[in-house]
Length: 181
Image 1 (cartoon, rainbow, N blue to C red):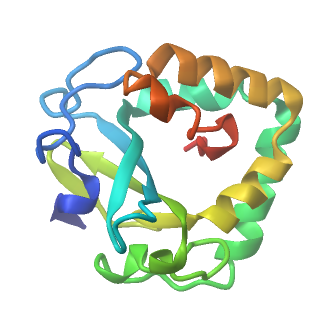
Image 2 (cartoon, rainbow, N blue to C red):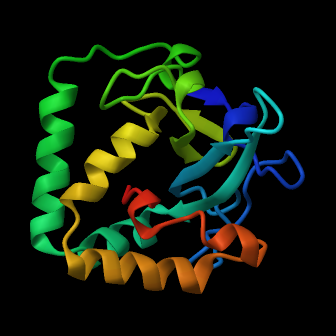
C-alpha cells in the first residue's frame, strides 16, 4: 500500500519531499522508480525533546543496490543475518507505529540519543512493507559492530563524498551510523 509521506521522511531544510538521488542526482519524484530515504538524528541535550537531523538523503533503488554490492561480503552476510533473526519475531506495524520503537532492539525511539528513520518510496508516496522503520543508537551500535574494516572504510569515503552539512556535524556522523539499506 502507498501512503503520503509525513514529516518523518521530509527534508529537514525545507519540509518538502526529497527530490533527487544523492548519488546519481536523478529525480526520484518524476522517474517513477522506487527509492529509499534514510534520516539520522540526534537529541539536543540543551533543548529537551528537540532533535537535529545529522544526515539525510534519498537514494534511488539502483544506487542503493550498487551501494550494497560495494559492502564486504562478511558485512552483508552479518547484517542480513541480524535483520533476519530479529524480523522473524516481529509483526508488521501500522505506518504510525512503525518508527516508535527500534526495529532491532525494541528500544523506544524517544529514549534514544541518536536514531534513524528508513523508508521505501515511490514518487511522493511511502511504500508500506517492513518499511518504514527506525533504528536506535543501540541498534546502530549492533550493526556497526558487524561491519568489516573494508566496509567501514567504504562508508567513511561515502560520507565524505556525500555529506554536505556543516563541518561541525560531520564528526557526529560516524561511518558506523550509516545503515546500508
